[in-house]
Length: 147
Image (tube, rainbow, N blue to C red; front, side, top):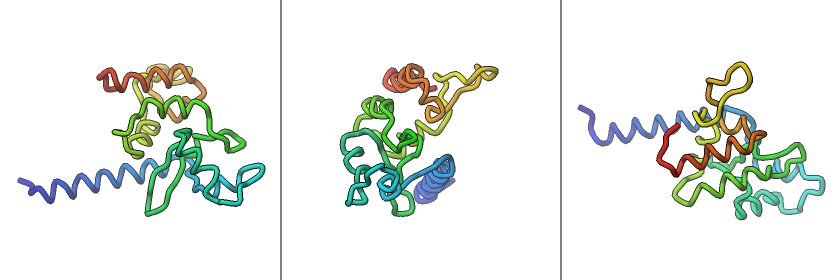
């Protein structure tokens, strides 16, 4: 039988493995990188990411003591996608940033795959061009369904 400390350690290891998996998928940007991609970068290199995050237009995670923003939250001009604000509005303060990142990263049964793979669930981050499907999927979180 495992001790409480072993159970806690196992949980931490699984959580860290999940964080590494999420970070390995796609592009993750620092505030400075977002700043550099602006057409007229603000002098404060933490801007505009800091303001966007405060207004819940984007989210970030802390990994290895550094803050990162998922690249899928931005358009080609490195501006926040409007759908991200809509999705984040559903995530109230009880959801931490890693829970939000996991929701975007892992396949969701409420979002059907692409043509030829309709029976396979898609990750929300891969379906942001289908706002109705993604909004429906996030709304099921509060309905008690697990997808």
